[in-house]
Amino acid sequence: MFLHEIHCTPPFINTEIHYAWGMSQMTIANEKKNYERYNDLKPVEFLEFFSRMAELRFPTDALPLANKLVLLMNIVFPQLLRKQPNMAGTSEE
Image 1 (cartoon, rainbow, N blue to C red):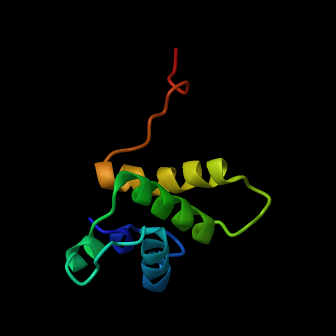
Image 2 (cartoon, helix red, strand yellow):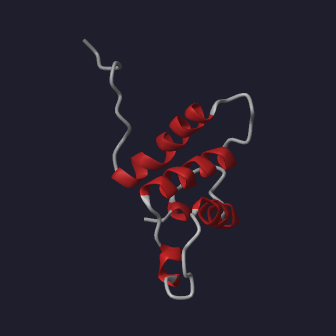
Image 3 (tube, rainbow, N blue to C red):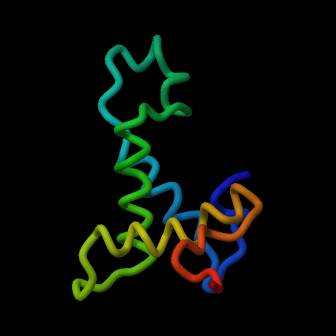
């Protein structure tokens, strides 16, 4: 599943996804020889990509990045995992 396939309102915009992807990548040494690396993200690059998407999705300075990341994870992860987010602490006793 790709980020543009996540159903949310407003939807993710392809230009924002491409911008966040491109800006999160480190410099590639010998890019003519290693051009295929442009399609891969290292773990640290993925974290930056996800953070950039959170900043683009919630463009306010009133929320810290950590809160924006939680909000984005609550949108993306349930659809990726095909289940509801963990509802810890809300079970009936």
